[in-house]
Image 1 (cartoon, rainbow, N blue to C red):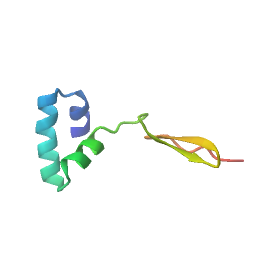
Image 2 (cartoon, rainbow, N blue to C red; image 1 turned 120 degrees about the vertical axis):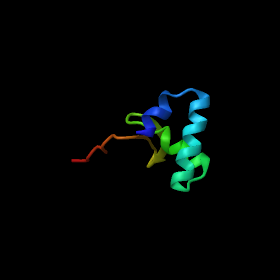
Image 3 (cartoon, rainbow, N blue to C red; image 1 turned 90 degrees about the vertical axis):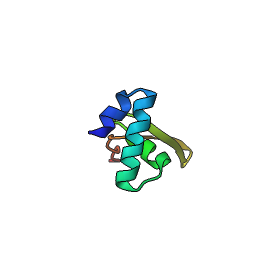
Length: 66
């Protein structure tokens, strides 16, 4: 999978992988880099909901109330 290769690659390797991936999938390089750099457990953002800070993590299930 190109995602694992991308994360482990050097800068030159990442450039080559980005070129291939963005051309094959018709994505912009910025969006392609964003997709390829995601991995399970990575925090992608925070949000304030009802006065509480919510953390968004790749591959984590939401906690259920109850």
